[in-house]
Length: 232
Image 1: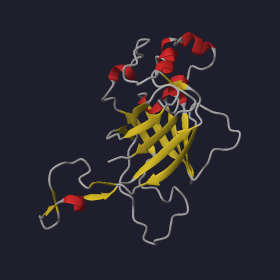
Image 2 (image 1 turned 60 degrees about the vertical axis):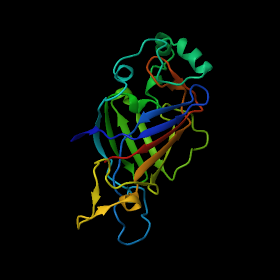
Image 3 (image 1 turned 180 degrees about the horizontal axis):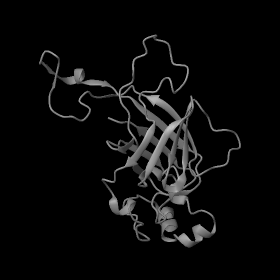
Image 4 (image 1 turned 135 degrees about the vertical axis):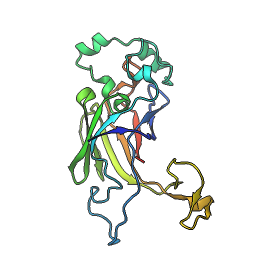
């Protein structure tokens, strides 16, 4: 079954050479199941806060003209580029990218979840969650408890370190709005309305320089992508 990607939280991207910061969408997760034995799960798969696996399809509800079509050259109003970033964007030449074998610059980890398309998410092994995209035919690997291997070359998807998060509070209403009542019909207020959030945190580094938009708005190889996946 294909599920729409909705209720998207934001991902933060740190772009020291090309841009200041950018908000990107990400998938989303629910409440962590209890561990009746009380012992820490042996693998990331066993400790999963929710089931992210399956097929997902994006719903484009914002920035349509930047995501559904290729913006005009120089149209990077949504990306806070510094002077060097603007210089690179203004020099964008898609034919040159194609000739140099870098046509996938706009499908890197910093941009791929902005690209409309379908995702297939599944466990590659007990500590590696895999995401395949039909747009750009890219593969992202989320490594739980992993660290960047020595001498690994930078790639479009970089190296992603993942962990289950969940120690910051959020409203128990999960966006439903309205007053909260206990089973007896009494109004629940203040901190009693809050619970621990549950989500997947992914930090990606070691990427090849790429584009945040298909018209050459750049990010550098020093970029850091910080994402929070949470569905509700």
